[in-house]
Length: 195
Image (cartoon, rainbow, N blue to C red; front, side):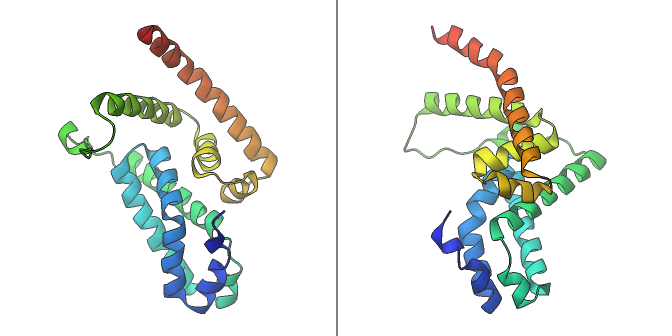
């Protein structure tokens, strides 16, 4: 865990604005990584990340200094991010929108770095993983992403999910097992193509 995250609750208790700035600096990439993996869409992950930190700041304003100093920031933020994502999914189900044209959803690649072949392979792998993650049940998907993408401990994931550690371990295990089943045909196909 980042060493700067340790005094963060105390920092937020004494100076909310300064402490919140540090909270965003320390945890923004983990929140974004989580949201990117559960949504499969960078633009949605950005929007939901903004909403997560907006809700966090609004909540912190209503907390006493003692409550802010007792926070476990990473688990607390991931709980907010999970709830923001769940609310977003519910809203999308209630009010579906038309898909954006492909040209608008393409990411621009910098001139330096891997070439088109490497980008295509990485993008294809990422697309397969995102599609497989989307097929997992919600609780298993959240548990797998928090544990293996964000890097949270089982105890932290349990806190976010609001369930016992043993349940989280089972969710992660089942989720990984289903991912293996879903991805095995794709991996076998890729092996045949490259041989």
